[in-house]
Length: 538
Image 1 (cartoon, rainbow, N blue to C red):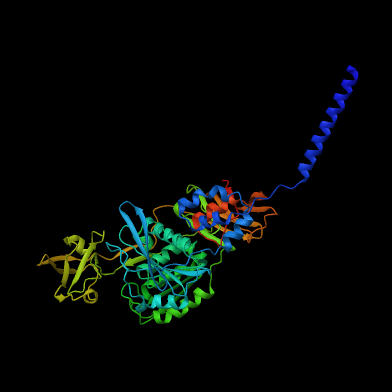
Image 2: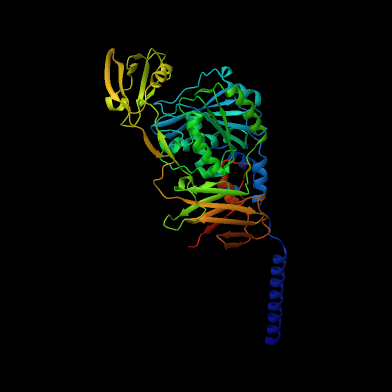
């Protein structure tokens, strides 16, 4: 009886093993269930919600496949119909407890939330004033820029700048980044037709973005600006070689009182020497005003319509000394070491400039109608006459030497007969009292067009199918971001760095990478399916 029971137990044990084995084989043979598509209501909240809302939904959406997320985000058209069409919308950005930066968005009458719409980011001139400008009651029908936007159906964003929030300081640049993403959150923006332009200081700011932060933009259109102002007036070093990554369509005026063609030509030629896709139009009789824009607007409109951004360029170049401005398109630098040797191709495009402009050293109040020119604030150049004699905000400059000053045009005319180093007599009204000061203009000085306080690193990158060729100079670490239009995920990706293969393998699409990068960029035309982190060997 015991022997029979033992046989029974043995048979039962063998049967159990065979059953488990069969179940395991069945489980192995069955393909894993694919990640579910995104919940559309949740995904809509992710796209349209603010940062806090989107981050709270991150975990749920990351369960969806990268493929389904890419399709859904790329095709999303659930933007609401705005309350304002054919007018201005005010947007405020709370940068800190003491700084709230306004911006104004023109929304054309023909804006359709179901269709991707070009976004023009227009930087204003005279950015160094003490207060933000107000366009709340702006009559757009009298502004050629907005008449064109209305006709073409463009969204046009006007960030506002002032001292402490300039186009070339980190606060002002971050503010513009935030504004572009906020407009993309609220409106159906064509990510490949986001264009930056501007006049005077706005043009100088456009040049600056082209050299430090071009990724969001299709091209840059600086009108009557200075290529080096961002580097000279701001804390960052600009690198003219970075203009290789985007087209720039610049204009200059032969009779421009600030930036005439003759003075700007060496800098503009330097951009061409660096190999940048750079076009310059010189209007020989133009001064520092927008009169020539009647010829530029049709060209600008044609470029917006027909020259979109290439979201996945075949070649990139990037030079940097600050990890705040460390990426361009699919390449992000995460570490560099300036004690390493410089590559032979790592060339600094720079030149010496001579400053012989006659300036007094103050910012004027553009709203003051005269007579005279009212002082809003002083520059930080202690050699300037206004700074040396102690001008104060609110002073009204009424005479230079023996010449009366009726307005800013009269001041420019009076300065035109002076030169650097000359003595000058300045008369102001202060609290109703007329005061006269004796001073002199600073001497002519020579300086680097692009300041160089720190050493830089640089990288040249090229992609060809699933293979990337990277040349580095002083780089330690970088990231390459991947999209299905760039590479095939069913084949190995090969990254060759300075002649050595540092990565060769498959990359799995990653929904978390896609979602995190979308939150960073709000770019539906360029969704990153995965990334490869690379360390450069000594």
